[in-house]
Structure formats: structure tokens, C-alpha cells
View (cartoon, rainbow, N blue to C red):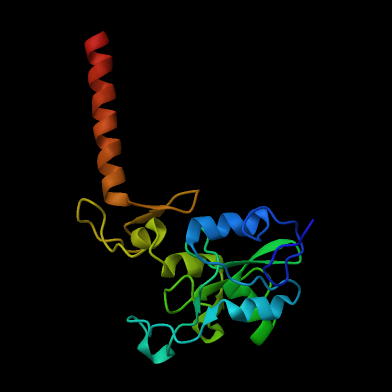
Length: 190
């Protein structure tokens, strides 16, 4: 039985000189790339385009290094290293800068999730990373007034046991209305 004609692949031929997985990739996409098996560093750099766009929000950072390999559903680059799927920006940071400090996230200053340029990454706490992003937590933290227009000042802000915040003026108003309804229910029941 003959072997796949793609360099680096020694699996048996299925059709047109290719093994089953290479033939399927060729059928789906119309192209085949030579797989680099072994050296993870070489495989990593083959999937990096250092001539990416300059981020609009931070042109001072210079061009992004765009990950051209597999992306997660969240938009982060992924690469399989030693049998484990790793985030590409984290691998780049560890290769060029060193290990990320324990308990810290790597925040993309450029806001491009598939960028692997370590100069665009900053080690920050998870809370800081979330508040910098475009999450609902960041949007709520940026609010200066409640939905009824009362300002979130130190005196007018109640911090809930779960760490959220609410307006003291609105809470007082709701409690007054609740007590009024309870009194009305008691008087109508009597």
C-alpha cells in the first residue's frame, strides 16, 4: 500500500495520492498546505503574519501580528502544543517575554483578539481585563447614573453582597412603595 504524497504524511492513500484527511481537506477547501509535524516553534511562526493592520484605537502600538491559524469561537488564535490546545497570544508572550505572572490575564491593548504581538499584550488582573473590554460588566461599570438619572456617588451607591451596585435613592423609593402596598393590603383584609 502506498503512502500519502503530501510531504510529512505517511498515512495510506485513499484517493488521488492523498490519505483520507488530506484528501478531505483538498476536497473542502481546494488547497493543501504542507503540515509541519514536530517543532512547535516552527509551526507557530508559520501561522503568524507580522504585517497586520495598525489598530485604530492604538496606532502608537504599531502593526498587529495576525494569527492565521485556527481561531476559537471567541476569536482568539489556538495552536496544539504537546497534545494541549493553547491560546496563541499566550504562547507568543511566553516565547518572547517569559511566563505570564500567575493569576493574571493577558489583555490585548490593540483590542484585536487574534493578535499575537507581545508588545500589544499586558498582564493584568481578570477584573481589569473585563472592565477594559466590551462586556456588559464594563458597560455597567462605566455608568455614572442609574436608570432614573440619580448620580452614582459614594453616598448614593449601595454595594450589594454579590459586588454589584444600586442607587440608594431608588432603593428607598421602592421600600416606601412596598410598605405603602403592604399597609393597604392589611387594611383591605381587615
